[in-house]
Length: 73
Image (cartoon, rainbow, N blue to C red; front, side, top):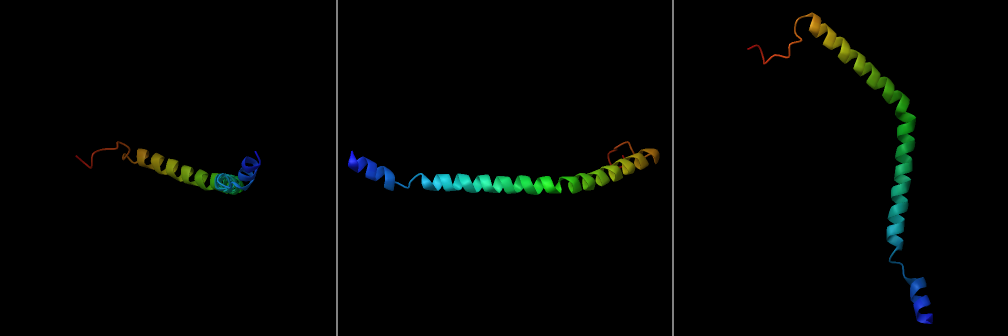
């Protein structure tokens, strides 16, 4: 019984898996924090891109180029 307890206390085979789990959790928390803080600016950037794409599509439709076509054939 004493040898079992001694072996159990000195066994470090599961320590690596726990360390990798902690590292993955830390990276996840850091990524969530970074994306949360950038959320507002990313929303603004994509909002501007969305507006420009919609304006370009409207201009193409009114200019007669909105058929999609096959290259003029």
